[in-house]
Length: 318
Image (cartoon, rainbow, N blue to C red; front, side, top):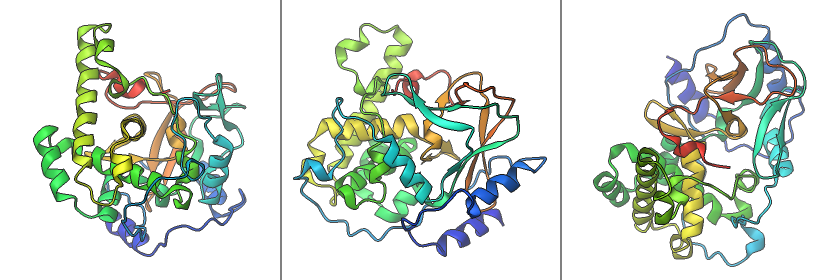
């Protein structure tokens, strides 16, 4: 019944328009009402989806750097524009939480006032998620690429691959992409296994080296499968720095849901720790709620668990 309600909800939604939503809007009201509840929904193991966009999947030549995200390591992350974009799409966060940085590169969520346990600190509507199932529904089944990924990486790598392609498609659309401000806020530097050179592995302990190499092999195989995707331009396919960036975005910022992958903007700014103080839950319509699991003093970073503590690769993104 929950799955049916989510699917009915999304089938009736259009791609969101850039209409500014004040904090006193319905989304803000949801936060207030939700914080008065005595119990939270546990995370539903169901498939949330983003409304399918009517892209015409045509190759575009990337000719103007001014119209596309600059993914070079020297490029600044535009956090201010991303926050305006998030608010316009219905994302809400309480005044006691803000994004901050110590070095201008690593951006993370922290408290600026005491936040009691059981408070919703962020609300992210389901219609701005990037998900593997939503990407596949939008892009269509990439049969040749799927066959190649299954042979090289295995079935479990398909969810990552579909969001990888979706990220590159949105990059290709440049400023026309509704996700442009979010893409332009993402890290440019990653120290993950996919970003390392073969010489780096010699400097790592054996287990870390094996895990990093495994991540690099996944990237190489995804890059190979990308060559079979007809609507991504050859210019993008041949730009390994760009495709590596897109792969790192997905591998370091996605959550697993029933074997699928989902990237939740704003919530992806929460850092990882073994000692967590927030968790994620979903309401009946699939909207994401980030709530505190214990009292969080002012000046404390928000931490959640990214999942597998034995694989450090996803924790190396800056």
